[in-house]
Amino acid sequence: MGDSTTIDVESKGKAPVVISKQEKVGGNKKGIAILDLLLRISAMVSALAAAAAMGTSDETLPFFTQFFQFQASYDDIPTFEFFLISMSLVAGYLLLSLPFSIVTIIRPHAAGPRILLLILDTMAVVLATAAGGAAAAIVYLAHNGNSNTNWLAICNQFGDFCQKVSGAVVAAFVAVVILVFMIMLSAFALRRH
Image (cartoon, rainbow, N blue to C red; front, side, top):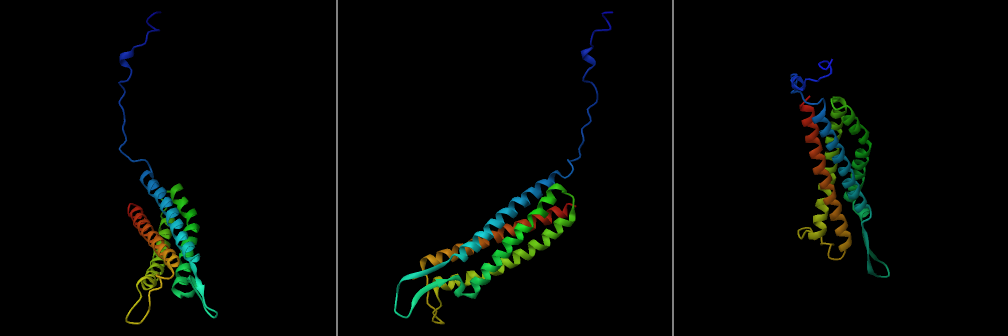
């Protein structure tokens, strides 16, 4: 009777342990998708900040004459209008692409949403780069002028205006860098399919 109630401890723990060398399904791709979502949000914030800074850039000088009032605004220059519209479109696209980015987190092996985001992200980076480059050229002229064409630098008089538009251009190029990194990340995730 005593023998049936004893436990043989030495025989426990000698079962073979099976270790799987397979990775967790979707583990690496899920991490890439989460990073893509975070980068997408930060690019959206940067593009929105660029559009907001450009849209609020106006300055009126405190002195004026009977016939003239000296002011500078983004809508005086068509390039800045293009910049504002383009960066607003990029920010809007990034907002609308968030659900697709969430789908890539939930279904890490789905290639369709990743390909769609890759194509549309490429179009967004082209638009943001074109807008940022064009606005950067005008900001350069505003700061330095051009003596060959007798364009004077206006940043000596309109300092706040120039600071805002310069900040908007910097924010646009931050968004471009984030978008380029997102494209490389998406291409890397698709390559591993």
